[in-house]
Length: 269
Image 1: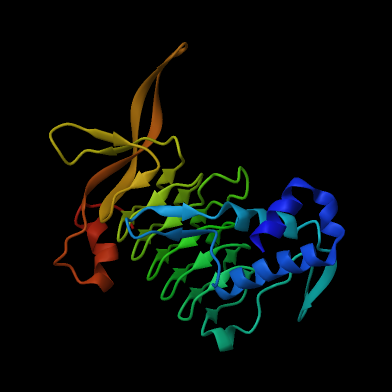
Image 2 (image 1 turned 90 degrees about the vertical axis):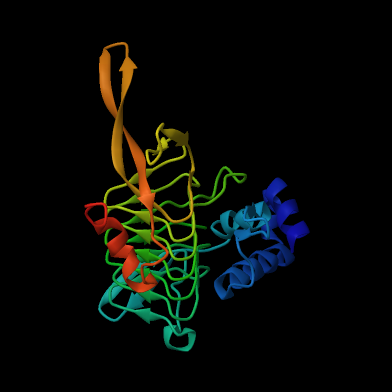
């Protein structure tokens, strides 16, 4: 399948061939069932991006035709089918939650009224809370809580770009935005309204001197919104950043530590 996808990526005329269409559809089916992933964890803790799988997702759009989709009294007009058979999948879906076909939802996932796009991977025990969105190809681990209004960015192009990755046990507070391939480590806690892009400064202020990083929140970190002063031609202004203010305590029970980790630092959940 990979060879066929790579060939079609370089020559779009191949999209008219039956074998190419079948290969693309097989990749999307494998994504939908969790047999393939756009990105997958490696033994050393890093992640591998499967660019050819992302190419298949991009190529899936031009081979689809617009159609009307009726769901009870609701009507949609789109190229992509909606995910189905939630009961058999063991997924709880509260109206008006929507997931596109080609997104993988493991058994035990809970979708409050929310949206999950094609190519995304959402592992078991995760809650996608009210009006949260999981963008195309985003990777969400086990037992993650995406709180109300969270925006997890999608990424299809550039192909070499890593998707947003939220690792196991992380808690993403209300109205947080995580985009541009940022990775949030296991059991990390983001307080409400934290915004993380690839260029956002993530500053660890727990030690005697600040430590800066970009694109990655270390495991078990407790993070809140912050700002720092930056000089511009017109003067000095405050620029948003994220502050690591502590660590989740191992002694705190996992089920309650998501909120308690923030309350210990007097931070809004």
